[in-house]
Amino acid sequence: MKKKRLLIYTLSLSLITSYINLNKQKSSDLSKNIIEYTKTFSDDDFQIAAHRGFSSKSVENTSEAIQLAANEPYIDYIEIDTRMTKDNVLVLSHNDDIYESTFSKTEISQTNYEDLENNSFNYIVNLKLNDYFKALIDTEKHLDLKRKTLLQNKDYQISTLKESLNLVSNKKVIIDLKFSDNVKEFTEKIMDEFKNINTKNIYFQSSNLLGILYFEKVTNYNCFAIIDSSKDLKYLDLFDNLTIRKNLIDYDTIKSLLDQKKNVAIWTINSSSEIDDIKDCLKELYKDVIYITDYPDLIATTLNEKYKTKIKK
Image 1 (cartoon, rainbow, N blue to C red):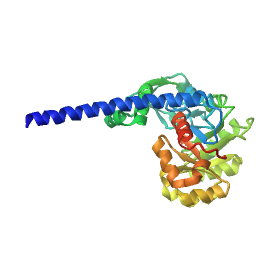
Image 2 (image 1 turned 120 degrees about the vertical axis):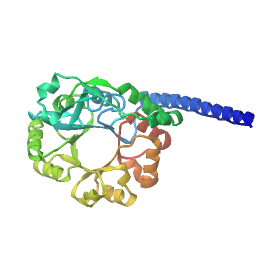
Image 3 (image 1 turned 90 degrees about the vertical axis):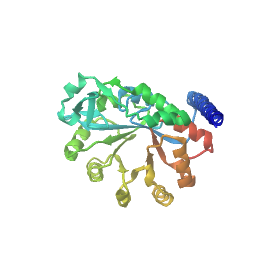
Image 4 (image 1 turned 90 degrees about the horizontal axis):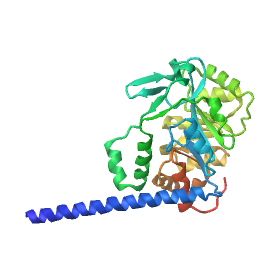
C-alpha cells in the first residue's frame, strides 16, 4: 500500500512538474509571438485602446505609461483618468487616494498640486496567493504575474493632464473625467485648459451620466458615457458614444448601437479568452468595437492570430 501511494505521489508530482514546465515554455512562446507581431506591425483594422496608458508595463496614468502607448503603432487610443487637486489643477490618477508608502496615503482632492509635484508615490499591486498559483498553470496569467511583479512598489510621480497631452499628439485620446461633487467647476476647468487645443481626436468620458450629459451640452466636445451597471443600460439612447462594461454586452444591443453609427468601446479586455467571449457574443460585430485593455500588445497579437480577416473600422 505504501509503495502504491509513493508511486501515485511520484507520478502526480512528475505530471505537475511537466505541466508547469510546459506552461513556462508556452509563456516564452507567447512573449516571442507578441514581440514578433508588435515589432513587425504594419497595419490592422482592430481598434485598440491602452487603458490608463500602457498600464501593464508601467505605472498607470504616468508619463512613462502614456509614452509607451504613444510609441506603439498598433495602439489607436490612449485612455487616461483625470481629477482635480484642491487648488484646481488637473492631474492624472484613477483613484483619489494615492500612497507614499503602504501605510501612508494622500487624497488628491485635499492636496495642492505643489505638494504632489514635489513628492514621490508608491504603486501598490494587490497580488494574492491565487495569482501565483494561476501563473503556474495559465500561460497568460504567467505574463500577467511577471508584469505585475515588476510594477509592485514602484515609485512614480503625478503627471498633469496638460503635460500628458503633449505626449499623445499621434493618437486618439479618451479622458475619463473623475467628477466628485464638482461637475460645473470641473467642466469650466477643462474648457479653460482646452481652449487652445484641437479636440478633434480627443474624447471625454465619465461613469457619472448626469455629469457627462452636462459636460457634453456645455462644451460640445466628443463624449463617451461609461455604462458601468445594468441600471445604466436604459440611458443608451442619450449618448452617441458608449464605453460598456464587458459583462453587460449582448448582440442585439451592440448591433442597434452600431447601426446608429455610435462608437462602442468595451472594457477591460485583458485575455484571449475574453476576446473569444466577445466573438461568441457579438459574432461578426466583434470587429467593430474598441477594445480597452491593460495589455494592448497581447490583445492586438491575439486578434491578429485568431481573426486575421481584413476588417473595416
